[in-house]
Length: 450
Image 1 (tube, rainbow, N blue to C red):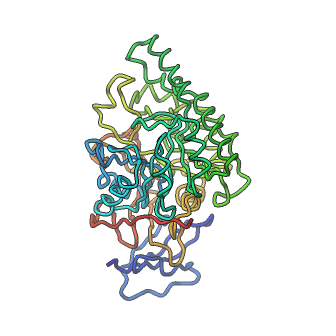
Image 2 (image 1 turned 120 degrees about the vertical axis):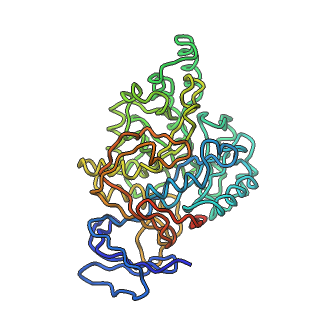
Image 3 (image 1 turned 180 degrees about the vertical axis):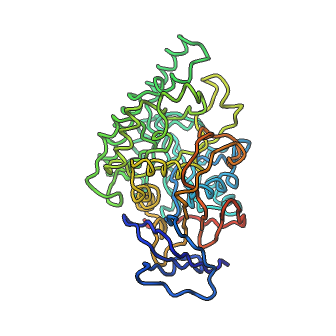
């Protein structure tokens, strides 16, 4: 049973506003919210947490992670990565299907839920993976209990490419209102680029060529195809990890996220790195879709600010250092990010490039609205008490000694972040407090209003 907490002297960031106030948490829920000019009476049974100088925000919802369980737990697992997420202020995650076995049947999907119910410190949901042949499994999904269907329109880790035009048409036209989330790269373009660069360099292609192999054209052509299919069939489409300036023209900001049929996500690494960074980080920042130019990076941030991009996520995807240090074609794509995404976005805030309210909108509110998550993503009375407390003036340096992802490395190593997560609540339980974890399972299965 969760305790009662009273958060006082907080800078509450919620629904486009920041105000000083207090929050009472009990029975796993936000019970009361008050501004300082209307003081909240103290509950004598409450544990008081003084939040002076700190931002209090809804727990971050990450709609795009790879926690590698089952089958790939030498890289990471649900316990270790949910723990790293909690330390990063992320209280809910949605995990991708390219595990071993791939989650392409309801039975395998439900086994992942069973594992998470026993091991996850954060709230969780799992995508069912689409294939060219599993339309019958997609039809079994209960839309109120599963975040969506993941479609790999370009191959990535896990070999789950959906390239049959009839299968794609069926997924987009006959999904019973499910959200269809896509990995969008054109396989033919990538295959031809692989062939050309292999001819030039052999197996040891320089990492900086990754952005040329998995190119702007590959991303744009696939995303344009998906958007056209969605518009034709009125599909609820969510385009994952948009990585190019050119793709932004395929989306709009005419409606708020809750009313859009087509939404877009950007991942932290596409906002943080550019192709200039391959020289330092090599395959450690080899991700799919690739990190591209400085112009793309700047355009993506502008897309966030303008409302063209709806969600900021992580695509957290750990691999071992041994795997990442292989030659180009053998080194898998992806890297860890959940522990550092929120504090990295706060660096943009400190540098005057984005407001704290917009960060909360894109990382907390918009994922809840896009996926229609029940009673999460906002600081509202009777909502689940998923809350993150941030000290914006507590610098710390990322080092191997404080990286929590099981893989033990991060391309953020060496960064000094100005902000630090001090407390993370999940369903009213104080799961993380100044580096100390309460590792009793606090996570719950996310439910959806569909």
